[in-house]
Image (cartoon, rainbow, N blue to C red; front, side, top):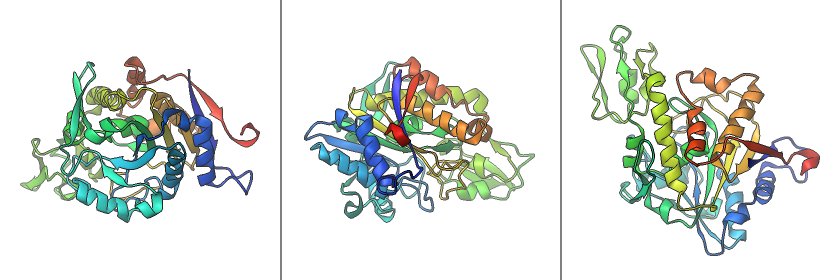
Amino acid sequence: MSKVYFMDFKIRDMEKDSKVQKIERLCDAAGLKNILKAGDLTAVKLHFGERGNDGFISPVYVRRVVEKIKEQGAVAFLTDTNTLYVGERQNAAAHLKLAVEHGFDYAVVGAPVIIADGLRGKNSREIPVHAKHFETVTVAGDIVDADSMVVLSHFKGHPIAGFGGAIKNLAMGCAPAAGKKAQHQERPCIDEDLCIGCGTCVRECAAHALSLENAKAHLNAQKCVGCGKCVTVCPQHAVSMDLKKQSTAFMERLVEYAKGAVDNKKGRVFYMNFLMNITPLCDCFRFSNTAVVPDIGLLASEDPVALDKASIDLVVEQAGHDIMHDLHQKSDMMRQLTYGAEIGLGSMSYELVSLNGGNE
């Protein structure tokens, strides 16, 4: 049974209960120092957000984690990989520019930003996993080469994965474009009877895979990257993915990539999930929707499966019903967890260690 450490955001002591102080104490209690060695090049894996989106983890919070890494004599760098879809994070130059605009600058976070798959997403390694869907997975080179890793994930919903937490942060976030494409094999279909030719999907498709032909949306499957954004923006619900048939395989591919991202770092990875601003969609959209539940708190563990399972359970408890399933009913989201346990990424059994109140 894995331990998952939890701190809520309730202020019990005005002298020591700010969010940044809670982050510091959570890092100490959950054993961040145990995964670090002096001189480590430690990757701090996070998401810098898309332009127009403000759901990403605040750089003010990230700085506290960086300072804890430095206390152990390790060298921290912030990192993410370039996107598969066309946008402002498709190459390292544009990605770095946006990261700085969102506050991930050395003066703020105390660490440099390195885009792990290089300028054009070509810096990668083939990692053997010998699993159901992949013999090898393609992982960003600088993720592989890092000595240790701290994975900071903003927990939220996702149109295909159902939810995005530590597992998805590893799987998609540590893969270059080629690896992301290998995971995204689903393609949408268009119901011409429902399509009114409004062009919303065409305007929103960053891959330019959609066009209007005879006043109906048309998909170029060769250009499509399977991101599913067209499904979420169509006002007529004319665009869909058969997720009930495709979702399970997608989850399994996701998990195999997550395992490949950390297989060379046994005992050297620390995970934190931020259960705040829990929006229905991921941070890759150019907006942040209203949170589906009030902020819950911070979780930390050395087990990404247990961490995501505890996150789901706390969100359900806060909402009073299975809100993540209600938001994304066609997603086989729990397969992330069950398959992760099957292939040795982590355990679904966990002990929630509360660091609130008198238990601190």
